[in-house]
Image (cartoon, rainbow, N blue to C red; front, side):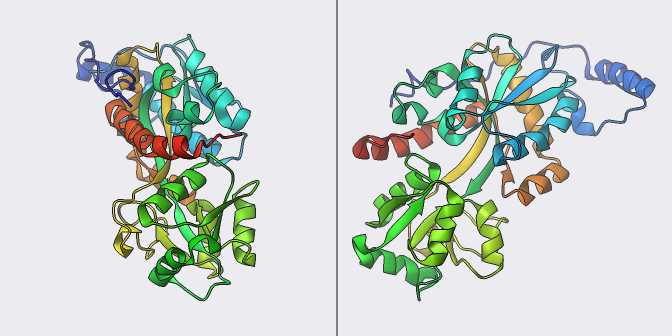
Length: 347
């Protein structure tokens, strides 16, 4: 992919000069005192940021209430509203595996609609669905990472191998071993296919309707391997029912203390995470994007928010728009060859 011709916005636009920070804080503090409201320090906007938003912001989520993306969004909208000085309202737009919401963000023209989107919707969605109504690399612009999570390599408890011995066993088993995933094109499928290429594995794919069914298949011994989200893995792991062999991230995670990374166990050069990020329509002004990104990053530094997300199976991870753009391009570069070689198409 030529990042010079088809890449998300890589450079930050300079913010216009604003009134003095002291004056803005004084005015804001007076209004808050009159209302009897005390704000945390991170809720005070920087003087260098533009006057945006001027009305409530809609944060579209492509999944129903109670889903993991919905929980992430609702964990941050309260403090984000304070940080921006305008309400941020979650609007659930489920449908087409989350693509209905992503397309609505891409087509929004009101300057106050953004989306919390999963990694695949910002990277390889168009590669796996050529007829998709939007192209994430041209119709959306990155704002900020919000939450990341490694995938957990788990093996069936029916097997007699554990830890590093399991990694040796899957290599020697060839196509005799099978792995489960919640379907073609999901991070759990793509992550395993990339891992197979790096580690020299040949395990065959068995799709299931969702990760709960994958876990049942592991517990029963119907499949031998799977990459799973921490949120679903942790209860089984803590109960010693599901062996967690390794994490797919570059360094150990507080989500599963004591579980080593694949790199620590000899699978070099492998780093794969699932993540959610805020994206905006391509037409939203760069200064407004930067304003939102800085507010998100400040909110995610709050320890209460970090602990709330950790309890949901996610690590709080703010970023600049440029850093998110680089991550998007890196993920596309890693996943594109697998998608094109195997002609993977998502439902």
